[in-house]
Image 1 (cartoon, rainbow, N blue to C red):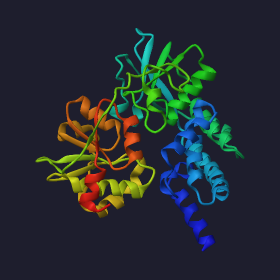
Image 2: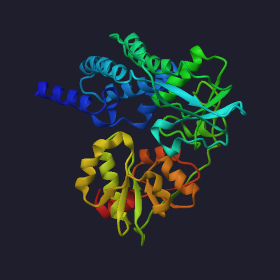
Image 3: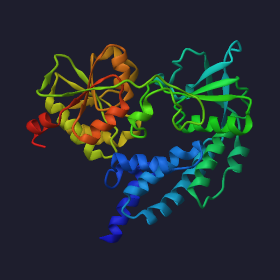
Image 4: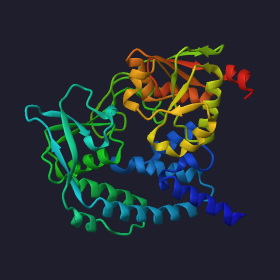
Amino acid sequence: MYIISIFNELLLLWRNGGYAAYHNIGRPLSLGDQRRIYWEIEEEFEIKWDIYYLKMTLAVSLYPRISKFFLLILGNYYLLRFVLINRGWVYQANYPTKSSIYEVYFRDNERDDLRPFLGHPECSIKRQKKSDIFNSFRHIRFHLTFKGLFLNRVSFLASKFKDLNLPETIILFEGRSLEYRSLYSYVRYFSRSTNVEFSWRYPTGGVLYEIADLYGQSNLDYPGRLHRNSYRKNKFVELAKKVYFDKDVLIVVPTFNSLEKILKWLRKTVSIIIAPRYFFSLHPSYQNLRSMLAEENYATIDESKSEYMNKYDTFIGCYSTLLLQAAEQGKAVMAIGYGHEQLEIMNASLSDLTIYDARALASACTGS
């Protein structure tokens, strides 16, 4: 049984993204533990996000030492495959020359929500076919530490910016993704005449920041100016009875660090929100939920994310920037929570919205 248990955990790690698989194995961490892990990390900005995911995964692992060794081997394999697959292109940038400050947009990802929104012109960065095989071979090496592994991956992508002539100031949206962190690293070491700033579309910080941290215009823990609006207080209301809609609703599937908690939230929600039809919006990182959602048999995943605002008048969720975007466009938004921790995370992840506490109602409707 012991061997089987170890094998099952390693299989889960392999199937669910390696070091970033924390939400698919073991027990979910408390909000306090998640914040503590993040703020104890003292690594460079370029890899802090990777180290955070790694530590979260190991914290929920039943066999952290074994899993850590396995993840290091798996990470080296992924890195080798990554640098070899991406040997045939480099980045190129296009932007008008009349401005000194630009918002960066990576056009290859085709995500409308990452487009410039502060009013500055766009610095478009996209992949250009060109042999980069020397760069690939230069980054093929075995690493004995995760820090070295993560830094080498960032360095590989940063080297793909070497032909870019960047403007005086660039603004990166959030800076969390690998491509943005790699661009920051390139500027930091090879293009110091360029100033890097960051932006949040909304003033919320999810699980990482306390409410007190979000008030005001501070840069938080970012290594440069952070453009964001001031956080505005949410209103809490206890949901006393079921809510009925005469049109279809879009349910934004929560990104909890537990698949079981996600399914429980969905079941409770459809028991108290009554509508002709339900449609799901699924985060790209949770593709493994597809089969589970199909088994629920009460909603269909809507893939047309760019059409949501045209198709739906009502958005239901827990916490998501999509809820904030819908509210901004005048849509009906219901942010619903069923536990103290959920409500606390929602309060930090949402701004100027009504948050519905449905604990008592869900218990009456579902018995849980």
